[in-house]
Image 1 (tube, rainbow, N blue to C red):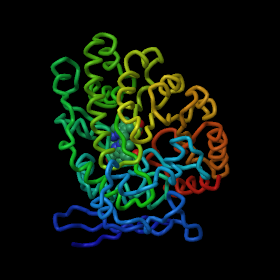
Image 2 (image 1 turned 180 degrees about the vertical axis):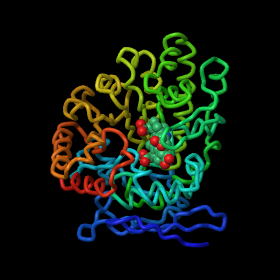
Image 3 (image 1 turned 30 degrees about the vertical axis):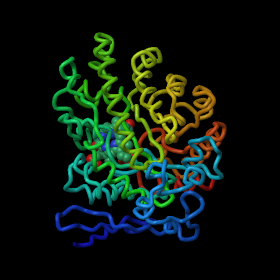
Length: 413
Ligand code: CP3
């Protein structure tokens, strides 16, 4: 077994990835040194990761009535700033993580993925673990997001979908009629054993940093399936929605069942929170969203009401924020177009907000960036709970050092 050291660049520990005889990269269990030697950042605000018991011992010891994650990391819900903010229990420092924090902005990710197709990496527990950990070592965010993709459960039930670099999902046979909808069977936990394995291994590596599981919401998944790939105007999707409403609701019902099962697998394995990505919901009017989409998303979200915090996110959703809040999540993700205080007003009481720095603000001069971060923090403080994030995913051209700086700015308040 050879050990390859990947230089993770300035300001981060170097990541050691071991290559097994099979050529598969496996992450060795280790905890990276603090990013900033002067101020050790301790996720959860209390115990450093090294002080926590090894996951497997805690898991074997078990704890009746608790899911494995709870058994492994007792007390996290009351100590981790991210989980406290999700539950509107104001932590001392605002928690921060970045959507799409794993991926192409990291050279160590590119090195690991050089010869491995995207979906193969999503089915390999060692790769999932390592890629999920890479941004955690780099940026010391308050939460990790499980490395996967929204199409993974669809591939797991047998659909022929690829992810094309620089483009996105490509569906070999788009789903546009009743026969195609009927092929969308329920997802069983055995369809995604690598997800359970990877969550277990991550809980051992993450120490006090919470792990966010995720899935695509029924509408966003439907858009990819009906269009066959990414779409600007969602024409075929809307044609089906308006033209064959019964078939549309059957399609979204089935996708809700798949999404619920995919999230349940992650929760049963021990993730600490879940995010439902309805990235393209902003293409809809509020009326259409309420009629054709919200009931299906609400059904997914309601399945986990008593389990873990639920984040509900979409882009261009300024006009949908009230409806998205009513769909039942604990936290509503907001893009950068609506200021967070106004977003919180639209979402209404009893919800935390997540967001919402413009992902392009990372390219602004530092004083402008710092002012924008400060503005998001000031407005976010007016909500009942605030998780700092970008308004959408990290852009590929982003300098990882700027993301680390944003984490420092947010923690400094
Ligand atoms: O946030 C994270 O770091 C966790 C991993 C994650 C990925 N996809 C990995 C990925 C998450 C949360 C997603 C969700 C996802 N996937 C969404 C919802 C979030 C959003 O951006 O609105 C959507 C719409 C998809 C579908 C998808 N997969 C797209 C549009 C793309 C981009 C294609 C490209 O290359 O520009 C992908 C591929 C993908 N998913 C990559 C990663 C790291 C890039 C793959 C690569 O490295 O080539």
